[in-house]
Amino acid sequence: MSSMTGKERMSNVLKRKPVDRIGLYEHFWGDTRAKWASDGFIKKDENLSDHFGFDMDECGPFNLVADLDFVPEVVEETVETILTRDGNGALLRRHKLHDSTPEHVDFLVKERKDWEEHIKPLLKPDRRRINFEAYRKTKQHAEEKGRFFVWSGLNVFELIHPVCGHEYMLIGMALDPGWIIDMVDTYSRLTVELQEILFSEEGYPDGIWFYEDMGFKGRPFISPAMYKEIIQPGHRRTFDFAHAHNLPVIVHSCGMIEPLVPGLIEAGMDCLQVIEIKSGMDLLKLYKEYGDVISFMGGIDVRVLYTNDKEVVRQELESKIPVVMGKYGYALHSDHSIPNTVHYETYKYFVEKGLELGTYR
Image: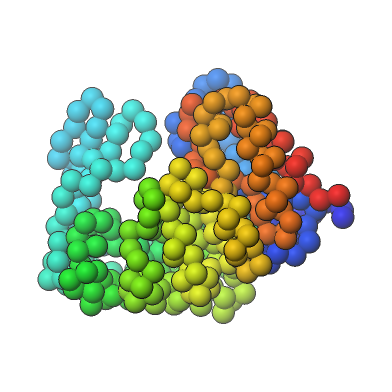
């Protein structure tokens, strides 16, 4: 088969149709980019899709914080961390010296009345929530490079916990599910309304990418039954909107979410992304069970890249890629973002060896 463009390749990967090679994409922590730039391997603001020849570009143009006019308040600052209150009324502590997920400290919203009083009235499809320029520029660049372009953003699970935290969200699911169902309904409707505004003015992407971290080590945050009752209606609304415009849906989730995969497929997921090995996910098992109905991106243990041992990286790639490329629905990606402990040469080898193994002959 002759060489394909990234757009052609990913379009086929997501439909499990013949391609010249497996797809390629990746995420990096910001301090990884900074280190590689300081070491002279990349330019400071270089587009890494250009640098490594990725098949995709993505843009996350929405701001769904409740109060758009709220100026984040610094509550406490140390040499290493900063504690801020944001427009959701949440107190979050972040590290200053390296990238990390924020620590949940406290929340204005802890039950239904807090949500109804402080947050829900503010969640309107305001045009200020959309970064039209970023979307326009990224879409144009992807078109110029022949890459597959995705709109990316958070879905309902990932939009709710920044407002009330995982603890209060899960307590609400158990004791007041109607409250969380209302949050799911509100955020899913707002997402579609904003997409309608953006796409009508700037054109449609090639696909939709939702971030939705629904698991941790060993298990998901919720049961399959709870997923279907509370979260799936929001997924159906947002996935159905994408499919109505012939846009495939990629779902990212860190953590162990294997028990939720059937429900996600039922909701309309076309591709499962990241497939975190250290949480208990198994790419080969998932491929065997669901490779006929969904595509996969990720599932290559990023910890082998931590070793910076090319032989260890080779063994990981050879144990998986020849299997999961069998039905054409696979794109190479680590099972998490690349940290700054991974050497540039190691990651470059990962790409080169992965694509060598993943080329159809």
